[in-house]
Length: 429
Image 1: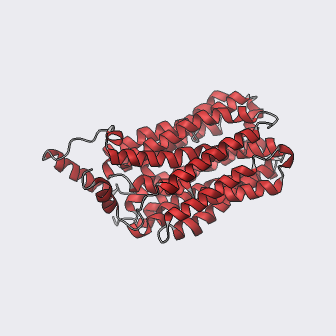
Image 2 (image 1 turned 30 degrees about the horizontal axis):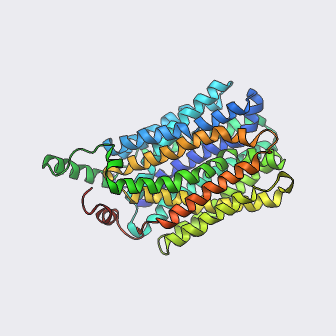
Image 3 (image 1 turned 180 degrees about the horizontal axis):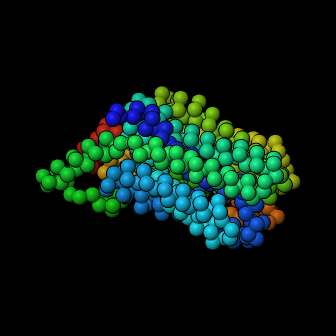
């Protein structure tokens, strides 16, 4: 059987981002409907967000899945965890009480987290050095496309006034996409880079040059530790703001701006449509050719402006402000911190640590987000008087992330993973 093309491997792997972000935004789009149906309080809403694929469960899945990927291969996680995703989605689609909804969110999150560690690593390992940003950007494109489709479907079901049943249908379409992706993945081969490095590792261990890989090498090896700290500084801190937007933005628009559910979903859809174009025409087009440091700085700064607009008192918030904010957030989401994090997470580590490093940094980001997600609706409050306070905190997160990524941006453009490893580890990984 002939090998799939590099782009086929990239696109199939990138579908993880579609169903990951799609599951987050499907929950966000129907949050008010589920809250009314189940009579949830702010604490229960916060717990749902904290344990969803947006936060804690995805964090744990990435931590475990990343280590399994490095020990036993990318394919074992990459292939079979989608079956667990489908099971979790069935709990949500047919949920009739809060425990069913919560369990579904947890299962979906665990599977998504594990899949991210495997898929994002696979994309970078398969990508040509001169086009790595273009290939990594495909996952980012799918990450924006998933929510855009979800919000379009949500707008349609709201137009027909289908209520909660409509939101169940939106979740149901993700089951179909996951099943099709699972079938396609059964034909995908293991990462050639992982296979080659595993063989090299066995030979060097047998000759006494290396010892067996320990998970703690991520923190005891100075080059690994520097990479981990950069990823956490860029992604974990930014994700506190991005995760708030991903799960709570329609909720914020409705509570703080008094707009309808349909209007809030249209605004969020605008964000993700903008993300698609930003990924295509900024990150995928420019990041392999021009200064990544400058691109990162400019796009990260737009995110600061976007959240600053929501610091305005409630009486000044209007549709124009929300549109500008959504567009700026969309540009950042498509070509900012997450796009760079996904690429750097693979570039900065040898194959024997690569997925585990991706998994740990993803775990850190979503774990911290789970705590913050529990607090967000409480800070905002039922009357949204706390929105300016929440926005000030989010602007602070965005600013710190911008500074860290700009100052410590690594020089990896156009280099093979082997070249980067030799430079960072002085040929000792």
